[in-house]
Image 1 (tube, rainbow, N blue to C red):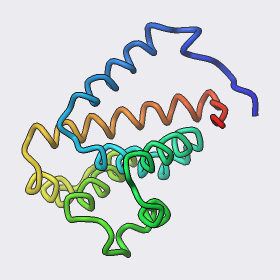
Image 2: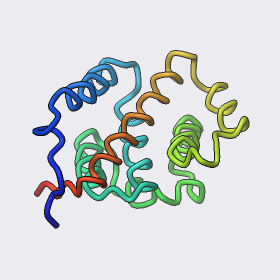
Image 3: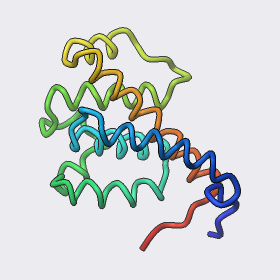
Length: 145
């Protein structure tokens, strides 16, 4: 597959703006595990091979287990994820599939487990990976070896 358009080269200011979000997230209070689970689950839902390839490696480097990565798409059917992780995964799915809206139940579950700042940071992480997914899918970014 040939990359359709290199937005980073064509519109470097747009990429700088996206990287600013990444910089913000890197200094957030979100745990490394939470960040990677959000990135992986949104990328699974969106079918973004580029991001799944990148973030599965990042998650492993951060200590994520193979078993949890393999079962992430079926997280509701396991006991491998904490209540906090489950709340973030549910929120990630509903924000990613925003056309169906974020239910009050999902939002309240997350709000009960996290303070407003952590929840806001999680929402920004979900929004950011969804933007990256859309860039990678639309431009057909090639997988990194």
